[in-house]
Structures are given as C-alpha cells and as structure tokens.
Image (cartoon, rainbow, N blue to C red; front, top):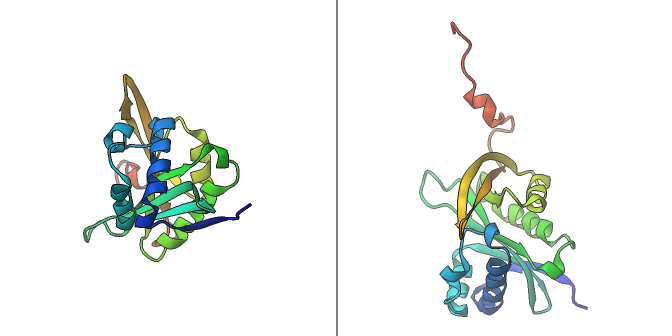
Length: 184
C-alpha cells in the first residue's frame, strides 16, 4: 500500500481535482459556497488552470487524490495581509486518518511567511469541521445567517480566523466593542 503524501497540486492534476471537487459538491452541498451546477460543465483543463491560480494542497495515495485544501491570497494593498482557506475536503473513505488536520497544518505553514491572518467559513451545522478548525487555533468572529440557500433551506456559516502574525496580545473581538463607562 502507498503512503499518503501532502503535496501542491498543479495543472496536470486537473482531472483528479475535478473528480474530487465534483464529489465534494455533490455529497456535501452545504459545506461549499460553490454549487455543483455552476462548475460541473467545466472540464479538467479549467480545473487545472484554477490549481495554478492559488495554492491547493492535496493528500495523495499513489495516484488517488484523497483530500484538498486551498489558500487564496487577497489582492490589493489593503487586503494582502489576509488569506482565505477554501475547498477543504477529505473523501469519506479517508476520513478519520487525520488528513484534514495534516492538510491544514501544511497550509498554515505555507501561509505563515505570506500573510498575517487566515480566514475561513464553515457550516454552523458541521460540528466535526468546527472542532477541527478550533483545534488548529482558528477562532470564531461572527456568524453569517442564511449564508447559503439550497432549494428552500438556508444554511448559516461561522466566520473563523487564525492570527499568524501581529500583536501577540490581540484582544478578543468583544474587548474592542465595549461601551465606555459613563462620564468618561
């Protein structure tokens, strides 16, 4: 049996990435902002081109892609200190092996010299993913109600952030929004 490797995916991985991404969108539609019908018509070359636009890591056993996680860097002078974690998915048969954590540990290591903070959104109804992200140090900073609409059902998303650099004594969000005492 082949060992599992975490590596950067490139354009040549387009066919395997397409297969995994479509599987993720079909099996877990509430976990992703992208809808299956929005990308199912695109071929492997389109998916391969997307792999060159951002840093996408894959958990690979032999030639089989088992999971992914993507780092999308912000553009523009005022935003480039932040990165977005997207497309985190591990195939059902590979869950419980620690691949999600391994992908994210590597993604954080790759992001650390590039950005000061990582952000992500996670379905409020996905306690396993929430635990994974919290275990890696991500902290919630808000909730977007009705973030996704699938059919007639709405899904809330928890907004999370991991501070990588900056003020080590960063106060909790609530400390910045307290009212001043009367008479101050």
